[in-house]
Length: 67
Image (cartoon, rainbow, N blue to C red; front, side):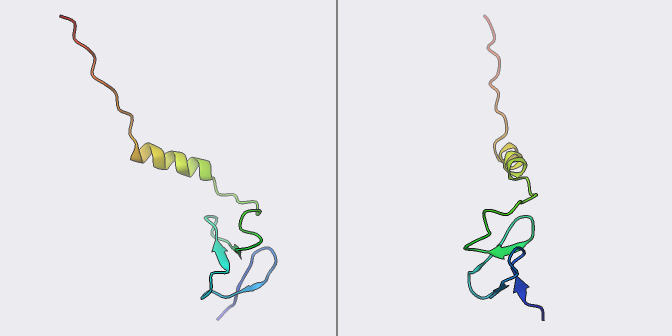
């Protein structure tokens, strides 16, 4: 069985404790040091935009009929 290691500092991480962070780019990092300062290729803006477009469709009102 291989040990889980941080992608940046190669520190051994315990998978039972909460000291590891799995990013959406599918890499594992130390939770305290490297979770926010790695160069992530995952596009969070595109993902959030697609989720909002799916969850909140555009609502248009019907046109008013003139009498």
